[in-house]
Image (cartoon, rainbow, N blue to C red; front, side, top):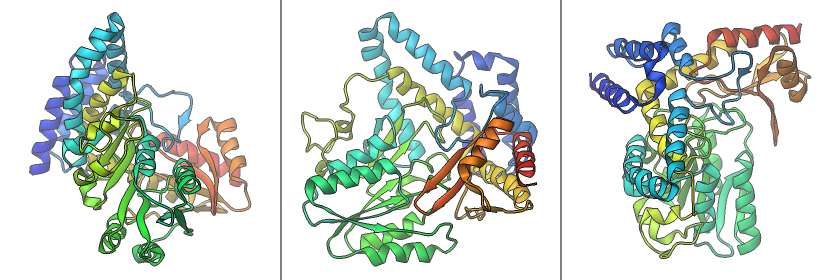
Length: 428
């Protein structure tokens, strides 16, 4: 009942806030709202295989009808309401930029901060709005007051930008990087937790944890690792690029000190939008990446001093939050897991096909890694696009090799049937 009431409230807020957006004046937009209203009486996970409902979600996007995009793990398209909002705010800004952009639209920044904080489950005084995961995480990596000999624990499966940032910090300041190298997929939390804890020493100052490995979708037990780090006085930095608005959790659930994510991934916000979380008591000791007048301030806004920015993009984030909440995170996570299971179960019946990702919901969700015996991932990805116009991405990173397949909420079952058809031809 509580979830149902929350969903109805979110739907009401969304439709009220979107009245100026043309999509909701169309038949598709009105049909989507009616469907959501009728689904409000269902348990949020019950519609994961309701194709009528998800076809309406599909109609809320402007994705190509001729190319099947299964690389949403890189960046996700925005629903039409978000695109319209960016265009609306951008046109308004151009009427008199310093007035409308800097004075009028910027008044929406604090309400947006509160909206994001509500989504993240934390205080609005712990949320900074920026441009992507890399910017958020590098703010922490370069802002921490570390000295020569201090140790950082991280993995070879982390995102390259973060790996390079830590390497640069080591080169510049003499900190020590302690590398873990996992053989994913792993379906035993304790194996992962022990891998991290065995690397901790009295000189370890921070642990870098990728919540979901972008290459193949493995979910790491962040909370359990963080709890072990806490016992030893070690700070916790979480790369949440692929879990925010993908999995049903709140940032404080992870027991971390710092968290960064890209909102243009699973939240489907405008391209070039991100979020940084810093635990309130940690803000004062973290230097901003871009200089602030008071770098030692405990005001989260010191991390937002990067000059002129696109306020149209920033303000449209709010519409992406509304759209996301309109669907509901539980319903969304269930759907993404359903889509993964749908195509992988069929693909596993084909000769030579394996999946380099756990199919258990505790260890993966929407992202999975297709592997075909004795086949180069680049050749597989090339075949899928050349012959079937299915866009995916070949992965060759450390010990992870395959083709990453990543559907999203707008993906139709017939698109995944087309993928299986293509794989049937390729493996025959």
